[in-house]
Length: 388
Image 1: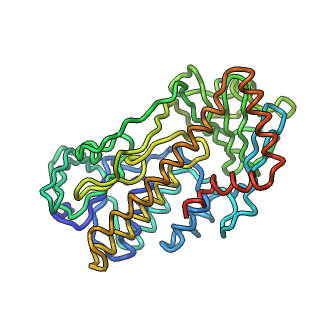
Image 2: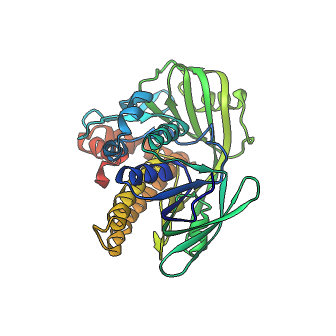
Image 3: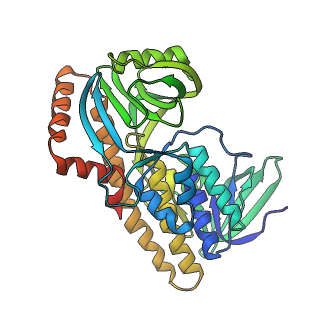
């Protein structure tokens, strides 16, 4: 079926933020087209944590129950130096209906959003790559190419770039973005393993040669994210086992059974200079990127999308003037700036290399453990409830 030549909103990118925006617009009956360059959804993905605030903002869209049913509820994050517990952050006291971290692979989150979009009559136009974007002051026109090489164009009242770190929409609009890059590379591996410490909590190990996060999925499946000076592109079971042996608990060692999938990647961090240029707006990784520490990225992208979707629906429906969209950047860009700053501090803390710096860090975390207000504040910030 051919693409329409015009629409009210063109969404470029069908990741979590693009899908959440489409669901929001579909719920309001707003005309949109959602395109993505991939011919099929990614089977593997990096994000795995869905925080309380994200579950709250998705609740009016009718998505939250399905996410909660599919995911695993984690009640605490524990920080370790090998066998020593430095700090335990609990979520049971959060002022939310969702006092936990929901662990759910990003591809499953996307599948739930896609299914819900279909139930509202929406769809994803896959295999449609955005090549260029021009504006005339009233509309924006995107040039597209499908998987066969056929060209098409769509004119839209608004275009939303939810197309990731290398966003075509952001670049076409000339929106500045000057990210920093961490010196360390990261590895990510989904594995089956025996983990004597259990699967009820997420655990962050701060070792002398780097940090390692262990997040439980269902059954014996775990996700491991670790900093690494040098690693192969797709680490194998021996590579992951070596990291567990060097950074994990000695008295309760983990044993990897097999690697489901793995990758090596570099991390950038930064926020776009602005979220709007004429008819074009940004959401998700097109607007901000940061360290995976705390599992914040997908969450604030989804929250961006819902906030933007509500405002677009109000403007297109004639209930608000175009200037109402200015509130989106005013409200959401400071959230991204705070999260980028927080995750940067967490990453730098976790990658300290000097023995003196590591000692001071560990003593500081132990001290925080004795201060309930500090633990509550950390839980609230991690759950992103401070962005309400």
